[in-house]
Amino acid sequence: MDGSKILTTTNRTKLKTLPKRGDYSTGTIYKILDDAFVCHIGFASEGQTFVLPVAYGRGGNKIYFHGGKGSRLFKTIRTGVEICITVTVIDGLVLAKSAFHHSVNYRSVVIFGKTEELQTAGEKINGLKIIMEHLLPGRWDDTRTPSEKELNATMVLSVNLDEASSKIRTGPPVEEEQDTMLNLWSGVIPIKMKPGKPIPAPGLNEGINVPGYIIDYIKRVETF
Ligand SMILES: Cc1cc2nc3c(=O)[nH]c(=O)nc-3n(C[C@H](O)[C@H](O)[C@H](O)COP(=O)(O)OP(=O)(O)OC[C@H]3O[C@@H](n4cnc5c(N)ncnc54)[C@H](O)[C@@H]3O)c2cc1C
Image (cartoon, rainbow, N blue to C red; front, side, top):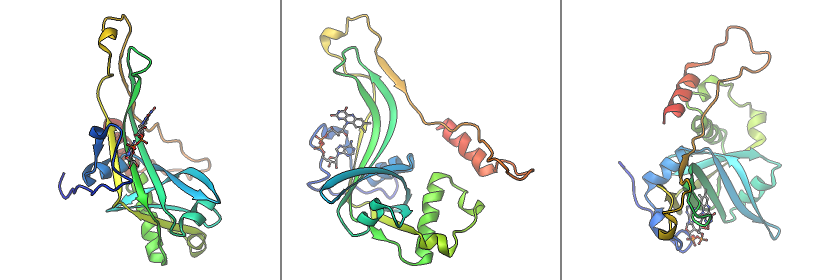
């Protein structure tokens, strides 16, 4: 992939289990991140490990997320503690003849690092725009800009994608030689997340049609 580079592995990112499924190219890592929009952030607070889901956006070699200033998650991770972020895309259920070899086709990313807090109003607006445009391209220009009060209540954080790994499983189930003769169905059920028909919010002004960028998004996601 153009401009892609291979990330140096570290003690934390080197795959030990099934390393052949690993891929450290930024092209692959970015693509997986671009195909999802929810990550899980693992962090420790007062002796307890938490793993919480949040929406994110990728912009260049960083991911961005935002949250309320009262959130324990955001209050903790803004302090520069080490965090671990995971992103998962499910591509299929892998059904083998044996219970043992059942699996999932997936593409996942694990990221290690510390957050950086976006400080100025301009930086925060830019981070929020990246998150929104990642969720739905075209949406930012079709929304009201955050007010000063809203911006003050919001923390926007980023993490560099310098220490990351991806792991990918594709293809049919693994079968044991002695199982191949069994009269049992095996194979893969592909799974895709698809958008449904947009539902207008109650009380929407008359004459406001579903915008073109939403129709484009639905078509694009339906056909990928
Ligand atoms: C949807 C899904 C379902 C899975 N189901 C199972 C299951 O049921 N049982 C099971 O044993 N495993 C499952 N896995 C794989 C699991 O994520 C681990 O890779 C695996 O259990 C090996 O763990 P480990 O501690 O030995 O990893 P190690 O190989 O020791 O991990 C070392 C480093 O490799 C990288 N790494 C490891 N796993 C991943 C990953 N998935 N994505 C990106 N980087 C990674 C990380 O940087 C990690 O710190 C699943 C993965 C996905 C995405």
